[in-house]
Image (cartoon, rainbow, N blue to C red; front, side, top):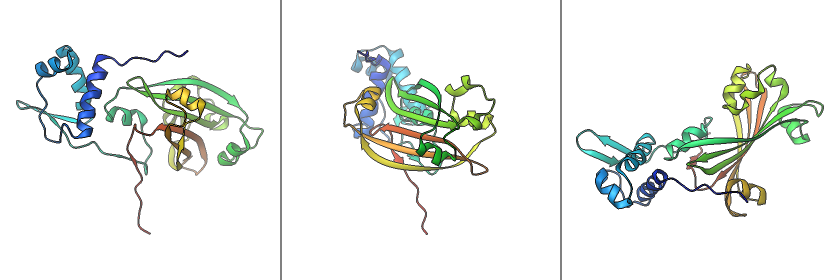
Length: 239
């Protein structure tokens, strides 16, 4: 049985303050109690309070006025999907510490659908990178990325634990545009286990194809996002 990580005191205090902000119990412009008062409120040390607040300051949920104290800031910007998204930045801006785990890296033949989307023959190979991204130890995104082996060329596959956009740029195929399909779904048994949620929990599924400057498809991604983790928007232009 998989052991569920318990949140640290810092994470507990930060989560509680963030919930107060999001619920309106702490409104924009409200001044936070001082460190002594918050330490008494949560029964933790001042150092724990200070670290919790620092995370919310860095994420833009709080602002500090020298000599006056710490105040609730306007909500951080929503994440627009008309540009490529840094999930590390998204998780940090949501007030959490980002991390990720690479579950596996596998070279294999493409499926017919993958071959069609990536412009490959069934005799060619793709490298599949399977990952989970976390916020404060909580699984938030499960992803499967497929890159044509010919795109990677001689790039060291040990680098695939880094940002795949950076890896593609190193390989000479910098991503310049992408097409994404968004669909609300519910978690099946496998994804529920990986994201530590109940089966049939609502998720956002994103299927994305990335292209380089020559228009070549260089990566196909499937992503499953925990529905309450982020606020994603799509900017639309008038015809």
